[in-house]
Length: 624
Ligand code: ADP
Image 1 (cartoon, rainbow, N blue to C red):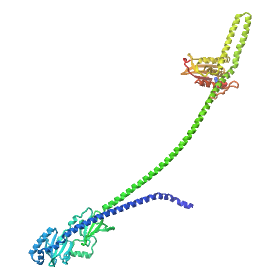
Image 2: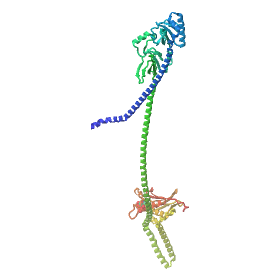
Image 3: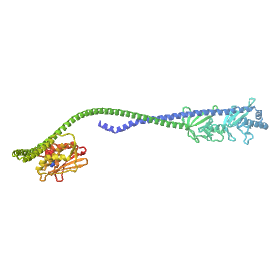
Image 4: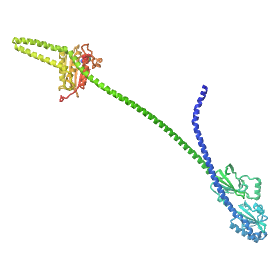
């Protein structure tokens, strides 16, 4: 099996090629066959047309020849009606009668337009002749050897075509016995030139010949073919012609015409000798019975062959055109089928796409629905967050307050203790009547109460929950208020506080309470950071850049390490020991400043400390 498969393999492409090529070869062969058939059919039809035309011509030539000859048929017989002719034959030595007959024959010859008329006696001697005046007159010639004379003497009226023995001029000889009282006295002969007929025979490339019983051409539209034979003559025939001197001194050589093909119609196709322009001609004959003559008509086959060739070419071209049309139609059909398939595919793809689009639309709608639901949830979450943030801010504040509670308590306890002591003192002084001193004490008490009131007022203000509305806030005032809350620490921790302001007050669009919260947070952080430092300097500066107010809070603490910087504003991020820091201050501050439309930034100072910058939108004083 494997071996068989192996031997099959190489022949497979060959077979495939054969299968593809074979139909085309078959089609080409069929086309060739049809073209050859067209060629043959056209050639046959054209040949047949030529044959019919040739036959028609032959008929007309034969009729005109017969007409010509029959015109003279009666002439020799009528000469016996002339008494002088009879008298001459009866008295051959009578020169006067001969002269009469000669003149008579001359006259008849002129009138009948024959070539020569002459009278021969029973011995074949010419007694009188129409050409008696000519130097080569027939008178006295013996023409007994001429077959027509012989025939006439045998009482058979003779007809004979031959070349004249005197001048070598061809002509048709009519001979008839001259009778007187039933007795033959001699023979009357009329020679007619029938060569004039040839003039009417020239028809284009066609050729015409008139041959005798032996196939000798004696009249022809081609002069060179005259006195040639259709076939070589037998020796006895040559001998006979020699004796009768029918063709005088002509050699009678064969024409050399070859028969190529015999057609069903009886015509033949022959190869003609020179000087025919075309080698192949259609030959047809017509006998001129009873004369044993034969007309040969040669039609030029060139037009027929050209028509056949044209038919062959035309058929080939038509077939090629047809084939191309068929191929074109096939190609169009194939393209149409492909287009149809493509259309179906496209429709399918389109349907698929539509389904996909519908599915996607449905899923998008679902997603949109989910999104709007999510949006609602998100908005609720945001609201909760904002609430939580607000509470966180508040919580941050409380955390700061908590951190500051020790200081506040101290702040309040000190004046309270002083108040108590001074009020006790005042009472004692009043009791002792030292009213001026008591008055001074009461003034101091009043100042202390005022100071405590201011402190609690600030605390209340700070603890108050934020107002959402933003107003132009004088930045310097906010800084002073915030400083107030940490003033005690600044003093206690001996921190050098520096403040640089612009000459003109700067207003920021924000909420004063919350700005103070941020500032307190920044101050507290700075103080915390500088707790262990030798140099403790807290600087606050206010600048203005375009439409922004900048508050910078710088310290001389240890600064902010890189690891801390990235987490500074994260809620609950603190480096402070537990219980001291919640890690909410900066997160809340950053949130508050952002809500004002500003930003809170942290950087290191050149001295290595930390600097926090609050950027706020400027509010024009007019608005305030
Ligand atoms: P808390 O003060 O409760 O720790 P904050 O959010 O206010 O929370 O501060 C977070 C951290 O940022 C602080 O723990 C500290 O490490 C750092 N920090 C804040 N301000 C300064 C500063 N001026 N110098 C150095 N570090 C600071």
